Length: 286
Image (cartoon, rainbow, N blue to C red; front, side):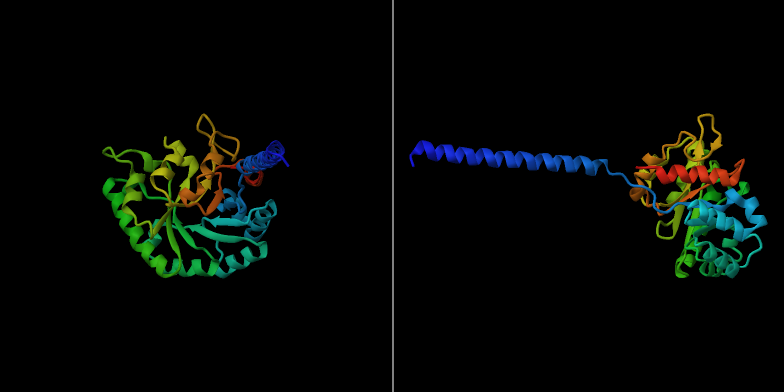
């Protein structure tokens, strides 16, 4: 075998290796495209039962059963409609639902907190959310005092294996002496003791961007109220408005989101509303 033949064979081998390498790189690139195109979807969608409050007042068990039929797996309570904790738990079990959260009155933090925590344990709530601060408390000092109470109640909740949270409306974004009260609450509450339920409609309605709050206060928003807003400010079914839920949910890890609750404060047909919202979220990729 002369030198020319050796070079030809080696060159052929090199070309073969190059072709193989090119095919491998192409396959890797294609795999990368598939991976980058892969999206996440919500696997557990919840609903705030305030949306179907009239139906709950008439028939707790039947309403929970219809909610489960739509496909929801989690619910958030806003009152128990005369049911005792064990009765609520039984109704949830019958419908195959979990209730990881409930809204509770601010006043219960000062009078009846221990009993509230005991009831939460029976029903299965992990997080108890204060949804409202009364108008007379809406001063900077009032918000700071509320934050102190949240920290204290949050410590008691943690000792009982529960978690305290706060749900915003839009009044927390009305500046007082140059400060945004929602920022005051976030800064004055201990992240280990108090979580937040970001209401995406009310943040937006207050002139702020949910993504900005996620970036500024990462890990603080364990729950979200998924409700939509039209361009003219009306509350609409999820997917019928302008809020970019995919962009927000793509930041779920940064935000700390664990639960997603559909809500509409004033639906025309409550069951039709939550069905529309559920269908949109079930198909949403982000």
